Image 1: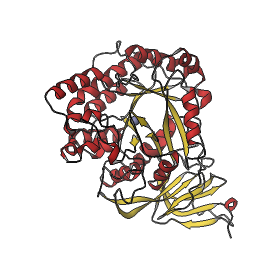
Image 2: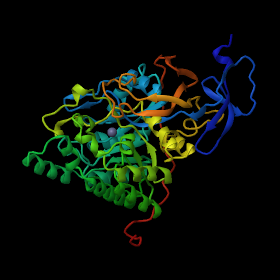
Image 3: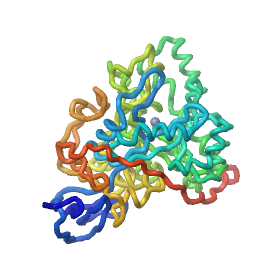
Image 4: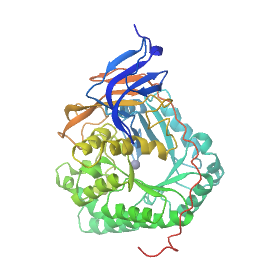
Length: 471
Ligand SMILES: [Zn+2]
């Protein structure tokens, strides 16, 4: 009878990584990858025949909101249920937010860890959302690394909720982050334009689901992306634009990168698959998220941006609001966010089937580039001797249709209800444990660990936009 220490040998599969695609056996022992090669043998190891299957390094979701308060509402999951759902969908690690609620961000990190430790079944990390530059926050900034935080987030909107970073605060944090070795990420929307539009729409009595898209047209995102790229470039601070939703946003990032700026973008499955048509549905209010989903042309520009490297990562922006929570007097009052931690990897794999991404690029955007962004490569995002044994086995012939009733997120609806997929994660290995195996949750123990993100290498000097010729 094989023992856990004797190891697990995955034999005969097709290993797809960000830079390779071919047959390989993989030996897992002691929670790590021990060997990768052809015709591996390991006496006493359990052997699993994975011929005909695709093996990939464990996908990491860089954008989830687990147990997240939103005004009066709160998402319906816990670190336990959300990481279980993530595992069912072929994710082996999630990165959630510690949001500064008062004076201190370190307190928020500690509070979040208290929620997750002993609950998460998968490894997790935290990034820090700065909502106010207090004296405490200033004193904590040099010490966030010690708490495992390497990526910060600022909201360029939500002025009325009191969490917006205005241009002064953006400039301050971008400069501090450059000196201290943090990457800054932003939610890029111009609040003044969408608040103005909201007032006009309310006055005209237009407050149904479609009003959500109408009050945040592409300029709301594009202007904010344009502005923050300029500021980050002048500050020489690495920048990630969260949940890019527009073709205009992709173009701005592509142009800045061509000029040497250290900027990249994240997008989410909802922007790759859904369009504003959803707001015409009777249940259109369910689809309210920010930024809003857009047009078919935007959707295709985002796939192109992912394929050509303008956008580097895909996060789910998971927010598990059940139907009963997605309510409000008007579209402007409905809690924002869609459930998605379980469907991110299957939907991106479908992008391979549909010709949007190569298999290796798929692996890169759901796993390897995330690990690199957070300084976790090659512990995560790789299948190399010494890497954590986080592996997902995809059956390319597995046929599944997405239904809320058979998904595992703490919600009673899915934005992709009824969508048929060919190819699905069927076995999920996290830290060497087989967590999901076919139809079974094989190991629901809350053995997920907090993974501290290390300080990144010093930023390369980027040229000033003001000094470069007009594009
Ligand atoms: Zn988010």
